[in-house]
Length: 106
Length: 118
Image 1 (spheres, chains in turn purple, green):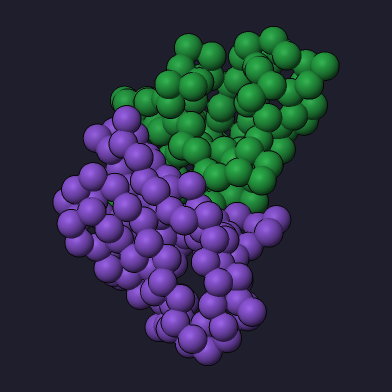
Image 2 (image 1 turned 90 degrees about the horizontal axis):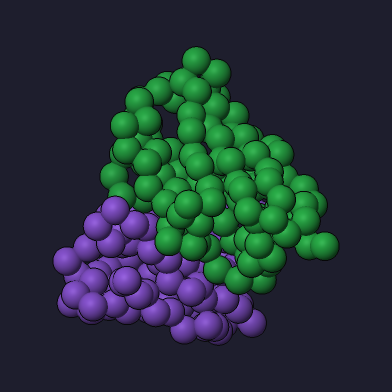
């Protein structure tokens, strides 16, 4: 099975840039999506196809994917960005998620 | 507006059965494959099952294969998950989600909690 690895937690100060990595074997050969999930809520798609933002997602969210690591970057992080973030890819016919990263804004 | 509303969750004893439903609206349901996911309390997301349009292709995670059955009724704009032989480790919030047309999922339901406990 294919594994995606994320750090359990990342901390950032308000207004600074947060980077959340997601690693996997030859991950750059796949398309990566990123989801934000606040406590008690459903996941929200914030990045798809490595670096595209759905309508309504702020420009401060961006993504990249190369070789074995994909990265979600949040520029000018705000308190409202505090949430869990999950990377996602397909492994043939199976959907795979990273373990999730809790972003703390402090 | 796209909406996905799950229902059918609840408390069930180990070995029991439960049927979840996902009511879709705001888009042409029959033209989309659909998916079930679950999330154990305090843990991460796990894909459960996918069903293609016209139910031609259905796939399951190894953890539920042989126990869960996914189906759809395009006339009712509804997706279903029949869960049999339930185990404690099946306890989770179950979400239905619509694919974006690519490799992501752009709409998710609010989830329904399934608790398997004696």
